[in-house]
Length: 133
Image (cartoon, rainbow, N blue to C red; front, side):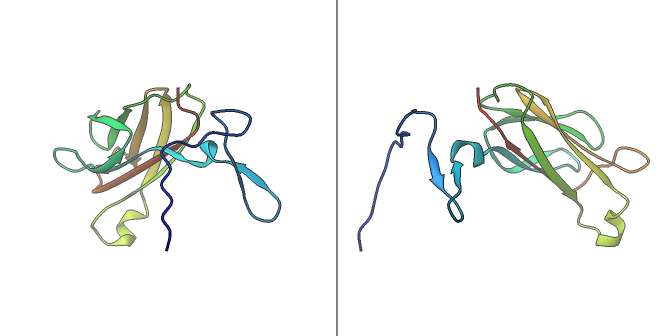
């Protein structure tokens, strides 16, 4: 069995653009499809990250409201962000929670859980897709 080790990939016509053959005859841009940052945060008590990628720090803005600050900034605030929130309590008790994950600026995202008011939750997850600066 052979092993292939690659340190650098460069596009044929541009160093910052690598197209990959997708399904059928469609091509997709590799850089556009990669997750640029993500966070797995415990939002109860003193907040703590379980694991992260491209996150330098987290900020506790108060009950159920947290910022995740990027190590490497995004190009601008026009990127896509998604996430979810859950707790260690029965699932039926989580159904009244609303979750917001917002592209707050080129340097951070904001994570919020609330129903009639902000709520701490055991599991906050946020993912970022777009162009790095």
